[in-house]
Amino acid sequence: MAKKDIKQDNNKKVQSKAPAQVQTGKKKGEETNMERARKMAAKSQGKKKEKQSIRDYLKGVKLEMSKVVWPTRQELITYTGVVIGTCAVFALGFWLIDTGFLALLKAVLGITLS
Image 1 (cartoon, rainbow, N blue to C red):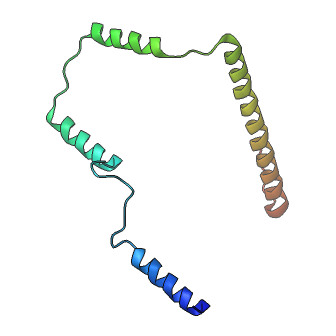
Image 2: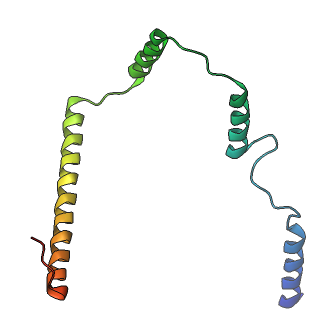
Image 3: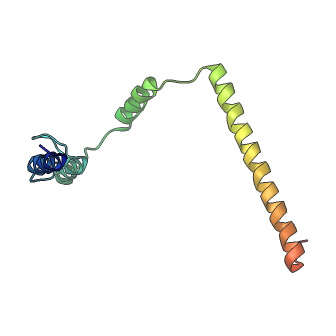
């Protein structure tokens, strides 16, 4: 067989393997996030919220607060330092941009701010 014949045969094979439908990648029985959201919205529309006593609410708050993983003292100090340092860097950057912009206005338009 010549190279030309092989290429034609390969093209035929590729064309015959092409799927008739575009597959979405989901298996039968699986649902997308949008479908799940629609189902949940439909379920919640028919239900009324039950009244909850303040005591039950506070119990729930206590339960959720017990699940929180609180930072250690050292982590808290480190994170606080990072936040303060980041704020200082951004404040300095904005001050430099503002000063440069003001100098540009003074030079080009002769505008001064008192």
